[in-house]
Length: 109
Image 1: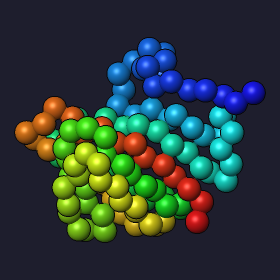
Image 2: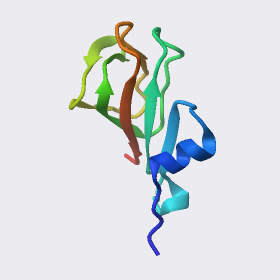
Image 3: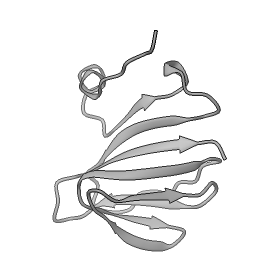
Image 4: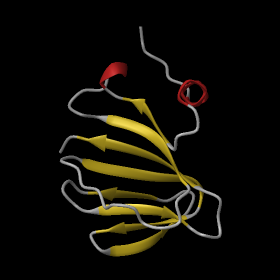
């Protein structure tokens, strides 16, 4: 049987926490593949992150900014970008918006 995950069920179970993993090893992903939704509300960059795998982003709603390897750009609905493995990156919400919601995924390189 294919595991089905609904975002509204995760929010009901976990509360409003900002990031929700939709697909991972518990739902059939292999080799570190993961996918989820994050809702950024912070207006400043937090700690930069790096991963051993690549991470892709697709902006769903709102507006924000991303800093990837020191380069900053606007995140707007309908845009997608990929952060290569080992590259520093951080995100934040545009101060003029309530949030920026993105779909993210990790995949083995």
